[in-house]
Length: 110
Length: 115
Image 1 (cartoon, each protein chain N blue to C red):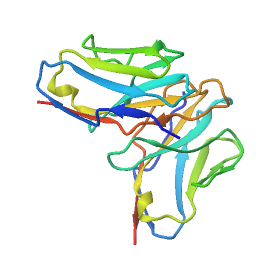
Image 2: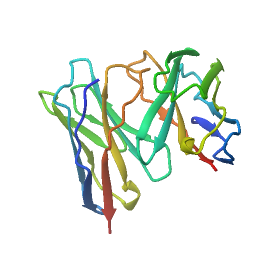
Image 3: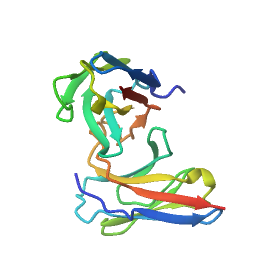
Image 4: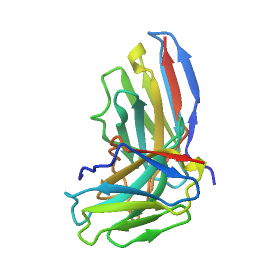
């Protein structure tokens, strides 16, 4: 599975959009991009995933570049409860293990 | 809907004792994963099952660790004998393999402390 690169930390003001980048320049054509987050002491929480089209759900939006070498997770109106470590992961099919990197620690402040 | 259920939530025991962690996956899911999280190593896979069959146990640290999945609704992770370096948070996750890349859903974890 392709490796990903994320900034170690980001800050965001409450109510503003949080844009979390991820580079996955070696991604293969059949690999999906997944985003999870982990709030302190809880289990990782699935946020969203996509293959090549942009995706949106009730939690976030996922923007994938046309060449698929990078993506951005967007939390449109960040709240204090969005403070967490966000992981960008690529893998080629369900039923295989997730490989977690260090992720991005997002700090949302009022 | 019930999510992945893990028990116990916390376990404190002395070195050398047997520890058994339990997991009930989401009903209908056919893949089950055990992960371990420590400050030093982050989140790492220990073992995973598809349709109750172990597929990849390369992450299991050593012979002291064993995992079973006797049926589709239950799995255990056993450590015998336990050591202080086994102290970590252990997560169980489940997913539906082969269905449009369904995501994994995690339990709340078991926080294990070996004294």
